Length: 283
Image 1: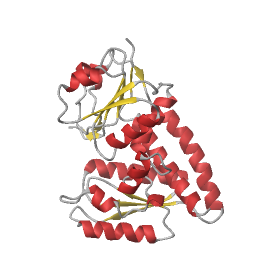
Image 2 (image 1 turned 60 degrees about the vertical axis):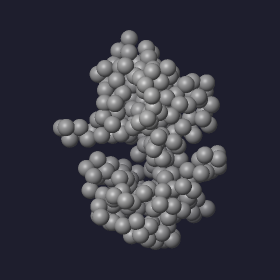
Image 3 (image 1 turned 90 degrees about the vertical axis):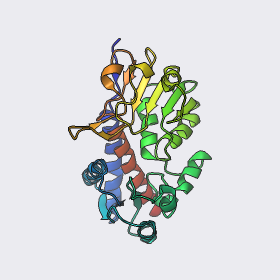
């Protein structure tokens, strides 16, 4: 069986083209969109992602600043910074980069981000809006999975989707987005009994556990769709996914590559959210 590559570059390019036009329209009014990234870690993968966001924003005409609080920042310091940025009318969008320092819980500090500027949908308020079907920004990575599937004409309604990973950043919000598309969703995690049996029963498997090579050919039934959300640093320093691509090739009907699959769509959607936040603040 030939395994189709679910690349995200074409979709990302389309999204970026629209975003650039809208950002330019705002800039012509003397109000270019502005995103501020707040970082409180020294994680290499996080650093790579922040740099990629800065490059993407620059290409699209979005001002992007980074506030580095250091890997030892306290919860109080992070909350204070987030509140200050949300109160600043010159800032349209705020994003808190993970991982966070030890003993700092994401919900505890992300609650300081107001929903109107929470372009990556990480605060409890934003997640509540998503769960209840109200307008708000969903987490961009979760949204990217759905948009990538739609772009490649993969039907979601009525399909059984196994989401491997239950984080508030990807797994849980993705389950909500998939339910909104009328999919039947199983959320798997570290205590799931016989994970291969559960995922092999699914039409679509989404790997979002943050463990390199976790999903192998044994986890996938013949012809299933596999979407890899993982971004792990490999032994050679390169980014690798949660799927052992070599063992899945030839068995899965389709597989998203890492890099080049969900990643570019996530970044494009995040930039679109920034522009939407800027447009709303100037309405």
